[in-house]
Length: 184
Image 1: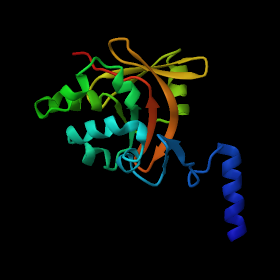
Image 2: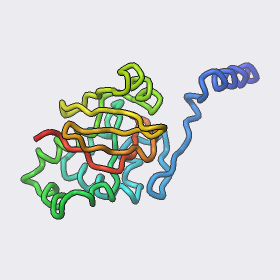
Image 3: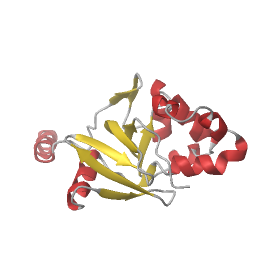
């Protein structure tokens, strides 16, 4: 029976490319992102996402992103937040701006788990673009430039996916180099 299970797993891996029970651990911000941990449990360990984690905490979204999901999160790095005009992040982190911060953060989240292959298929079906509905009610546009995956916001700002398919127990993270902003 054990040999049969191993053989079945090997065939599944050959046919589908990846075994569902052997998702790889990806390094992000100098830390291992374990597919057995949820989005928050992994994100707090990334040195590249300290601003995002602080924003999620200030917006009271920790519990949501620890939830069952699944979620697809486009996670801006610290460098992405640094591209915003001076004072923007500190202003957003103030308690009186919590609703605005929640809107920006949930604009980076799509319900369901969409790995890079799923997004690429949607782009192909959309003849070069895929429209992704965000949890905030906005729309992101996914598109490819060669082998690079990009996500654009409703104002035309574009973010490059720098690390794709960081699997989590409750979804997937795609690291991006720019903060996406909903239409105001």
